[in-house]
Image (cartoon, rainbow, N blue to C red; front, top):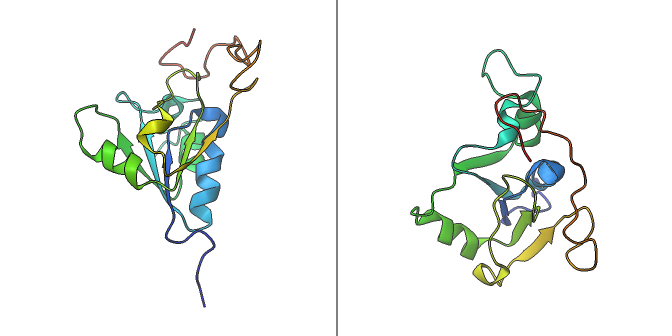
Length: 141
């Protein structure tokens, strides 16, 4: 019997770099993981250490192996279907360039939200770091 632990589960990965590995681990356990990237692409694609063959960051390739990537377009009807069909949604609220949707868009899903200081409280809006991105093609504020 070769059934994988999460076979038949659907995961929508909206996460930025701090949680990029979570979707990869769920895919490794058999979940169908869709990485919904910002329209311009995930900034991690152009991070340092680029694969010479594909021209894409090695970190992006490693952390997104086993996922299906789709570029976000507000007019794309697939997004509603992805939200409504997801069992799990992985996101990093407040992280630069990461997509976010209200939980009401997918009330059936388990929402995995990772933030540096929680979702509520006096430091909820604090950022973990003020450093610039390692991506040479854009600077994050």
